[in-house]
Structure formats: C-alpha cells, structure tokens
Length: 308
Image 1 (tube, rainbow, N blue to C red):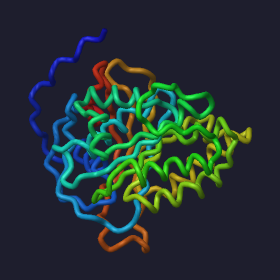
Image 2 (image 1 turned 90 degrees about the horizontal axis):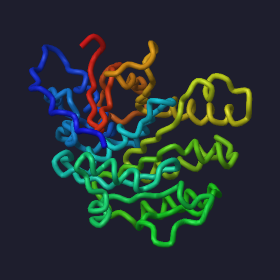
Image 3 (image 1 turned 30 degrees about the horizontal axis):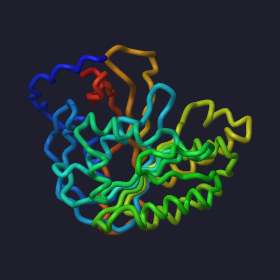
Image 4 (image 1 turned 90 degrees about the vertical axis):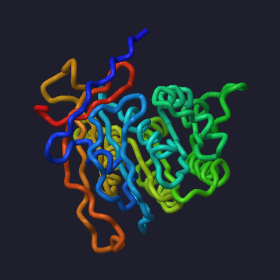
C-alpha cells in the first residue's frame, strides 16, 4: 500500500511563463479560443489545477494526438483531460465526453478518475460521460454482471464504428461541447490485421460529429522506424498520418539519459502551422515546448522545465 505524497510546498510564481501555463491551454481542449490564463501551480495533485478560462466555440473539428512509448504512457494525461472536461469547477461550458479504450477496461479509468476526485459513474448517470469498452468483449464473451458500459463484441471495423456512433447518439445528452477520446485503436489494428487506411477512413465520420477528437497511439521506435513487417508498416502509417492531420501532437517519451527517481519522462507539445483553410476564429496556439514530468505513487503529477 503506497503512502500518499505530502502536500507540495507553497509555490511562488517565477518571472515569465510557467511551463504549465502552456500545458493548461492544451488541456483546455484546443478547438476553443482562450484568454491568457494566470500561472497555475506546478503541482497537479488529486484535484488537478488545470486552469480553464472563458471559451467560445471555434469552427472546425480539432484532432489532438497523444503518443506514448513503453514506460511513458498517456494514462495520466487522459485522466486529467477527463477531469478538465467533466469537473464542474474546471469547465466554463458543460462538455459531454465519450471515452473509447481498446487497451484498458472501465474499472481502470473509474479508479484513476476517483483518485482525482472525479466520479465517472455519477457523470454517466448525468449523461455527460460514456465509456465504450473495446477490450473486455472484443475477443471473449463479456461478463454477465459487468458494469453498465457499452461493450464492443465484434472486431469487425464497421461494428466497432457503429458501437462508437451509438454511444455518441444514445449514451450522452447534447452539450455545447462534445469530446471523443479514443485510446489505443492501434491495438485493434495489431490484433485484427486491419489496414491503416481503412481505420483512418472510418474515423473521419466520427471526427465530424464532435468538436474535438483525442487519439492516443503508441510511437515506439521499432513500430515507427523499422517497418520491416506489415504490422509495423500499417502502424507507422496510422500514427504518421494522424500526426500530420492533428492540430496538436503531445508526445511522451522516457529520458534519453535513462531512468531517474524524480523524473518519469519528457512531454513535448507541437502544433501545426496555421493553415489557410483554418477558420478566422481559430486562436493561434502557443509555440512548441518541451518539459519534464513526474508521476508520483499517488498519481499526482508535477510538470517542470529542465534545470528547474
């Protein structure tokens, strides 16, 4: 049983922008205009201090890509994104969120959210949150007395997309903002042999139905750069095509120098350049940035600059 980390010491803002200032903007769902936020505290504890400023709707359907490698997963970032959208103290406008996961079941996400003070079951009853389980029943029979999640029971791509569409149409109420988070759809590609192009085409109608789509994909070097097998080629195509299409890529990786007791990894935030077809209401995104982060035993997270 882990001992909860002690509360962080009082934080005195340093001159200049704090690293979490930019990170908070990205965590505020990137398809919306934001006024400059005040510098947040550097310690994201059980109640993450992700600042949300007044937001107005922007034209377009934003795509955000979160990439991970072995030893530097995106779980903590997805959980804080959920908290940022569903917490009544965080969002100016109510958001409805559909989370689809092909790697982790609903119990994992409910437990992680509870550590942040977010009750996903209560959000489900209020029809602000829906979970689509792409792991439990995809290849084996789902449990008879399982949680009230929408469970995908076929690996057929059309059936998978129909299940996600049904969650968007039937499991959440209409809200000013709708966010779709798809966790590790590359696992579906790896286990079924689906073509990358087929998955990309199937995702497009889903992206058009929501304000923001967040994808999490693995970006380990052997999967991206080797490309000697069909699986590696299809995976690389899936990741690289969405990286080019995404408005923002948030990449997590381990330290180049090896493990460190007080650093879990590196987070790099990259935004594509403004496109002539972008709407006039699109707000310019902050410049590219790179920070270190540490995930403690109690799931509290600290993000800081190198040398800080």
